[in-house]
Length: 250
Image 1 (cartoon, rainbow, N blue to C red):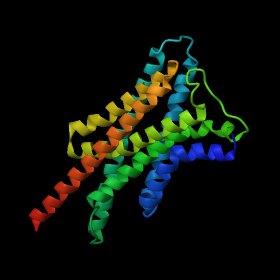
Image 2 (cartoon, rainbow, N blue to C red; image 1 turned 30 degrees about the horizontal axis):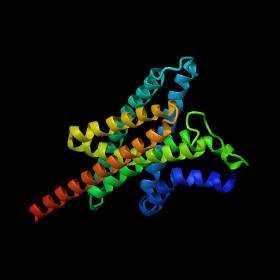
Image 3 (cartoon, rainbow, N blue to C red; image 1 turned 90 degrees about the vertical axis):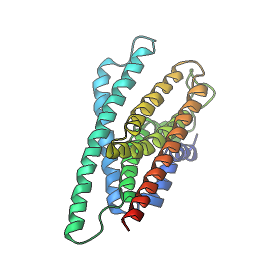
Image 4 (tube, rainbow, N blue to C red; image 1 turned 60 degrees about the horizontal axis):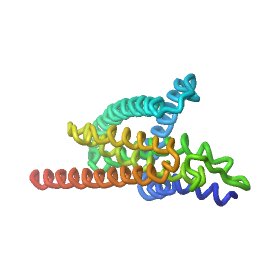
């Protein structure tokens, strides 16, 4: 492999996020700051969790359940952190609205709040891609590639990039769904993010079986498409409801 291949893997994992950043996030400094802060927080959480599990790795057993336990604890920690971040962002929204009232400016629109959630979710996705994919790509810039026995059909670096893209998509848009659910008290949306996160994590266990990546990757992208569809439905519903309320007030 060459520099072109290594760069291609990185762009496969983070290219859509880069495009979304340029199109939406980069125009507002506050969203850029939210993205950077979120990425740092999620990276720190992953590093802390890996430090805890480092004492037990590598697993001496070939069974799947230790890996399932690792995924379960990781998802639980990250979902607790997601709720904490929502409380923090909610407090920030209140501060910004109070400031807007003092200077006689409009309060945050619903689209602003959704973009804040989008930036926070993108930070989660980017942190996942950096931790689980980008950090592994240094050898991909060399003269050869690498295969693993369990998935000998596809280069290891390509598999990592494809899986990272799926998780970036899931994390980015599930944050919008979760923040909307927390704000509205909608249990369905509140439970959607952790359930999809856990399900996607468990699907990666198929990689432990011979040829499992051929099954696991389509399943992951099924979850990513489901997340995108539900996010679109949630955003459309909230925008429609908000427009109806404004029309009733006029």
